[in-house]
Length: 403
Ligand SMILES: *Cc1c(COP(=O)(O)O)cnc(C)c1O
Image 1 (tube, rainbow, N blue to C red):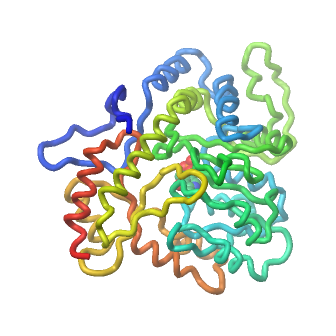
Image 2: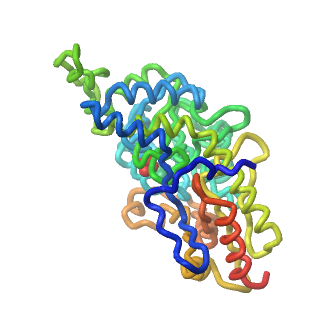
């Protein structure tokens, strides 16, 4: 196992380590040296919004995920909204989506003029199974969409879920916010469904700070997205202020303001060059946690896929009910020791605004409720060290109580 910390400068936002027990934040954003240099170059260049850096980032990104096209956008949320609009489903068509996902992904369905139908989950993976998906699709007639999330970076079997939902792959969009580096069987996530949406948010596996990407093999969809992300202006309108660019443009499609900037793209290009190194570190961290917590009956460790590849965006354990503190008490006790954790996710049906906008299946969403009460995500990022992981696992063994 390589120690990825070698060659990394300390992140600027890291707090000085006070004397006493080791403090481990839940996540830190690591921007590599080359990315900082790229950012400086763009800031000095006289062109900071969408331009040649974005085009280069797209060209470099697409082959990494095995897709023909990559279209850079402002966020994964915007990516999902635009990709769903690109499906051209009739207004208010149902879109099946896990209730155990980030709320913004479900908000994007609403903003695309479609109706989220929430799907319960399998308690082992935290994701919809073919059975829960079929249950949520029961009784649906006519055209519908499916938004598949690869939770924590665990590969979801997209084709199997689409079949269970009664949806053709042409009406499937993937939320790959956690899944850059995930493989489903022998294919990287990025070209399996009609459109795949990635996030470059500060905590994600490829961090820019903010940003997103849609990948697709569909030429027409790529053309639509490239225009819709910038007000629907004709595809290359961004060039109009560059030397040789023309000022005339047309607007032929419904657009929004969701372009990525050259400043972000320049950071992303350097982070992409580092990506394999970061991923191998994340895999090592998952192994350290597995080993450190192996004997602790109080905790259920995250499932490992039997095929494909996990991207290890999150390492989420479940705190089994029983002797010792429950999940919330454990979060508090860990925080007192300076260890940051998080919960992924508050199920969407627990959130006020979403309740009136989502349809829940007749059987309810009880597996999602069970997992929500027990789940706990441990520190995992590009720079968390073996000593950090040891501090977390020994605190957990110490605080977890008798099993
Ligand atoms: C982070 C996240 C998003 C949203 O990504 P942004 O780039 O912040 O818009 C969507 N879905 C999931 C599962 C996420 O974790």
